[in-house]
Image (cartoon, rainbow, N blue to C red; front, side):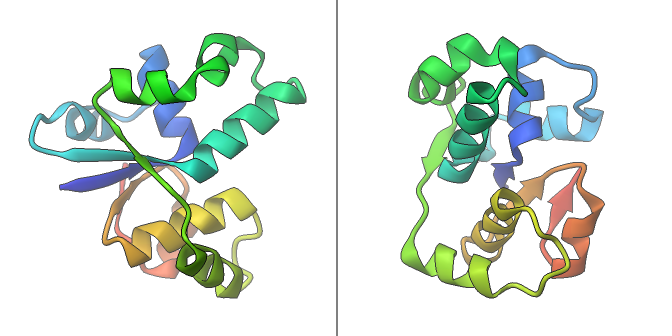
Length: 128
């Protein structure tokens, strides 16, 4: 299975936080699954860290590439097509980071690991 971690899922995975569902934890740990972290999540984490919303993210925000690679995860860049689809999505969900994750999941045939039930309205496969 190819999984795209929502920003909170990635953070909770790294922290070993119980807020991450058991189903998500099992799927992320499954050796045969391919796990992706979007450039949109990097942007979201470092932005929120900079403005003080995620103050405990110091080591992760300082070197996201190592944090992602250290888990055996893969980076998912943002393409022009991702941007075009994210921008054209209906206005059901207004968060630009989430809209990008939805577009990437749709275009790259990824299962979105997220607790965000509004994603379901876009027809993406979501695991939680």
